[in-house]
Image 1: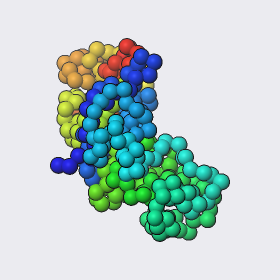
Image 2: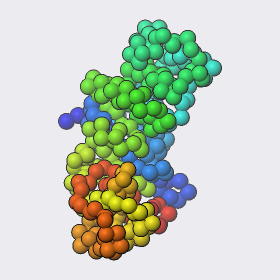
Image 3: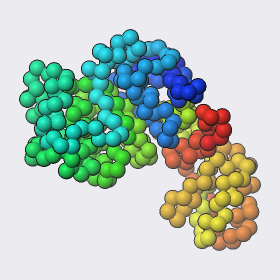
Image 4: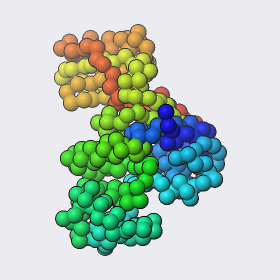
Amino acid sequence: MTLAIDVRGLSKIYGGRAVVDAIDLQVERGRIYGFLGPNGSGKTTTIRMLCGLLTPDAGEGQCLGLDFRKEAAAIKRQVGYMTQKFGLYEDLSIRENLDFIARLFELPQRRAAVDQALERLGLQSRAKQLAGSLSGGWKQRLALAACLLHSPRLLLLDEPTAGVDPKARREFWDEIHALADEGITVLVSTHYMDEAERCHELVYIAYGKILARGTEAQIIADSRLQVWSLQGDKLGPHLAALKAAPGVLSVAAFGNTVHVAGQDEALLQQALVPLLSQLPGLRCERAAANLEDVFISLIASAKDNFGGEA
């Protein structure tokens, strides 16, 4: 096993609060790691420390075989970082943006590198179009093309598909898998559960701490969640009381179905008894836990870094 990232005790403190709190992270080369968690959980801060944009307050280890604290400049030249917000020049064309990035990296065969990036991401026909006139999906392609210009060994993608339509998201993920097959390691933060399912492994972080890690199957199994599926009319007015019942970690609606999850089977069944008596036509049956059940339950039981419950 070759590790692209191997860091221990990674920490960042702002105003006396640990935004990233002693995280250990090991990522294998050529794998896609999904980085999940609520807003403000420390995902972006972690990504920025790994690629050398932020200096950690504590921690040690390596990124791409280099000391991530002492050799940050060398790491930057081997990492492609795609930010949440489109960061290229909107008054330049696609080709001009890519040529500018290639100049920054002092690529010896700049024109060839730009041509290759345009071809790979299907941007040739739009090469002269201004970046500011592109839709979200095409801006995403341009941003990824810019990340790949210098042939990075590691891609750090910070919520790259936010605001992008489903077709563009699928095409993006097809490209990410193709890159991983070529040996590029990808760390991607996302809020979408369908995207999480396309990652080789997942890390769930909340309030600066890792709460779960592993494959989708491992995380679901390790959660030990018991889930009941409810179907019936007029469920809405009863959900608030159900959420507050002892033993209930999450209540989530999926279309006409509501998933009720917890770890204590006895408490969970006890919470459902009043509902069954009030709604005689209610259908209640066991269901398999999914990633969304797990993550909603994790955040419900996590302590935030201001000292309270989530």
